[in-house]
Length: 266
Picture 1 (cartoon, rainbow, N blue to C red):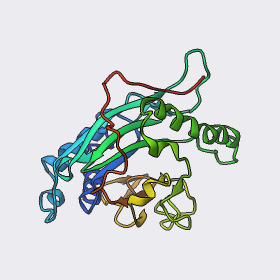
Picture 2: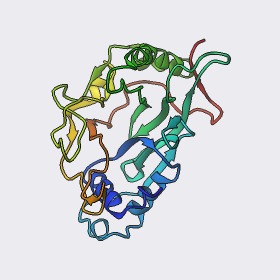
Picture 3: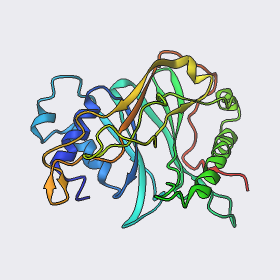
């Protein structure tokens, strides 16, 4: 929570969001209330930069998952933040569940959100895979998690048997593969590709062709950097894509009852 209360971090995150985003997935939240702080600043700004923002402000809501796994100082959470004035509705969210008496398929459980954006139905799955480590010591675990990703789609299909878009696997990455997604003060241009946005072949019809990596204006003189100041808000850049939402590409209604769960096949 200390990090989420930092005015420099809140300023950078909020201004980046206000600069043109409507639906954001967050990973590696160290506190369940961290996203609440960002949402509060967007809706009731207290900092000069957010107060004086001249463009669209929106009305923001959020949802935070239960713990997805452990990080080095405690539990870790995922979340979604979305602008309701863009006619975005969250229908349902849940962590992926593992079959009983089965080993944990992911180090951190994927977080699934079903959304209605104007006329466009979509399911967003936020998956954080196991890092390989400095010497690639966890490369086998990473590959095992990658191999389980199709099973996540199968688990979703069980709850949406008529949602034909999910049946067409054919996924492609929206983010240019030549762009690095990590960042630090010592390496501002990055050197690794950690973050991706994958869409299936049918959703490609809604893809505008615009996507990218946000690398600029991610530092603040108010964010501690060791014994100094001016650090980046995260070692991951924001990756983004743009979808047309004025058309419904399927005939199914994604609204489901709150008790619905997504479970991998044992």
